[in-house]
Length: 96
Image (cartoon, rainbow, N blue to C red; front, side, top):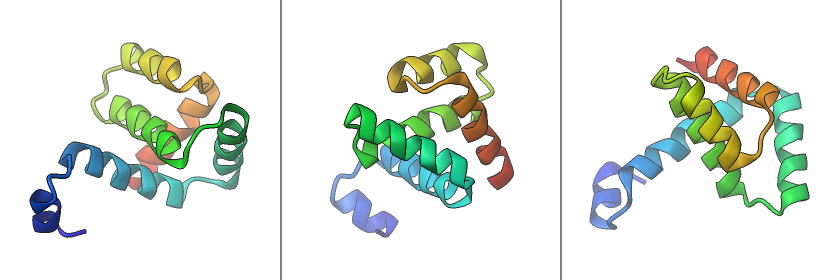
């Protein structure tokens, strides 16, 4: 989707950029992260968009360097372990 098409459709550009960033991380994430996310999604009936939201929230926590507060928020929202959040943040560092 081009930027002008997104604006014309009234798309939330922040949410769109979160999904784009999350997809970049998924593309570079190792197989273990992917397997854990798939398992978590199956176990909690989490949709693919929700999994991307987890990646986006944790990625923004890393990008803003907001520290523990945002990491705790991401963990509460997603019920993802601190170990997995650290792996996801490491994936963000690799693409930046």
